[in-house]
Length: 144
Image 1 (cartoon, rainbow, N blue to C red):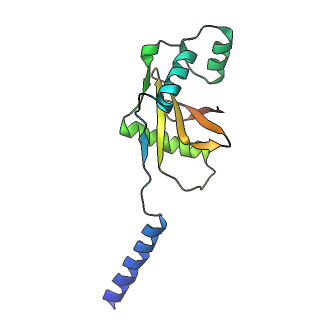
Image 2: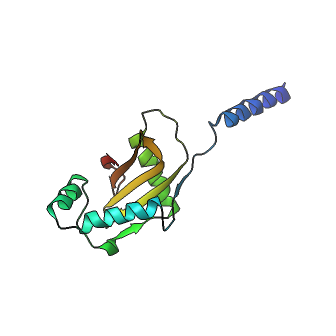
C-alpha cells in the first residue's frame, strides 16, 4: 500500500514537471556589447544627459534623473536580473499569467532607476520598456 501511494505521488510530481509547473523560470541579463543592450544603453544615456527641451520632456515623462554617462550601466548581476524579471513580468503580463524565462536588458541609472526590456516580448511590432525605482516599483512603461 505504501509503495503504491509513493508511486502515485511520484507519477503526479512527474506529470507536473512535464507540464512545466515545477520548472523554475529563469531571468538572465543580456550582456552583449552590441544589439539590444547597447541600443537601449545609448538611448538612456542620451535621455539622461540631454539638455534640449524635447529630451528633457521625455526624460521627465519617463521619470529618469538627469545625470552623467558614468552613472548609467548595463546590469549583469544575477540577483538584479531576477528582481528585474519578476518586476517586469508583473508589469507586462496579466494577473495570474504563468512566469516565463526571459533574457532581459537591464540599464541602471544612477542609484534610483532601472530601465528593463525583454527584446523577445512585444506588443505587435513594439518592444515594451518599463522604468522601475530602486525598490522595483513600476514608474512608467513605454513602447518603441
